[in-house]
Picture (spheres, rainbow, N blue to C red):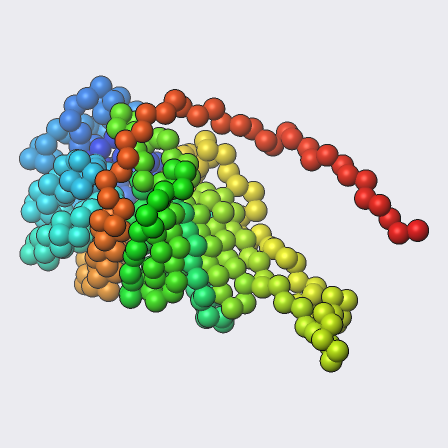
Length: 360
């Protein structure tokens, strides 16, 4: 579709990231308003972006697409009710994750009834470092067999972790999850399999009730082990590393040939892939996140007016099922009330020089 689509953004917290992403796509979208509850923050956001603020679906002008960046029912919001009301008006909808499986089914059904598009946006898989990991994983798995997955995340972003892994592995089934009895520090441990690959998953199943967007120990870390080496996503917004498997041949006498002529001896023990310099947190919010939204909305623009992609819808439904099963295994998040952390800057630190003994 080559026309510029009229778009409304619902919600002004994460919705502001959508607005920044849309600002990158003037040839595809024109923001015609914000849908909010009329709070001071939503009024200020509308003034900043110089668009009208609407307080109900009934007030909206003619709109092609609505971006629903409002929490869904599964995390205590009314985002899915809003998405359904928009679909019923014949408006295409992108809804921010996470959403309960049955709610996604209802929205897909409504979209079919009204001849419009409904799409769930997992968000994190469009971040440049995560996309680098997914692309690299697909390449590696086309050449070597997967042997294990070791991953960690906070419960806040467990759904995107499932979706990322599903993209990297080419699917999620079969899966099975078993909880280990005792937590280790802030993490609970789950073993099992994903896409038939042995899985070890650690989840910080904790949340501050009064500050649910903070106090995570980490977002995502993933290690994909294969017969040829390990691929690591060091952090959601950081670097991707490739580490070839270390293996030293033995000679006819059974002695390890550590100074032999095997090509593997000349491989770097670890290589940075894609984005060697991680961004600052300010750059994450100002660049990486809006770029992720722009990537997702470019695909939505191409899909509007085309037949619905049932394969993508089924994949997202599988992600919802696996995520909900993980949630059942983990149980309710532990309420915590820690003091805000004091981030430590290590960039100026210099490792001490060590004088190594040399052979005489």
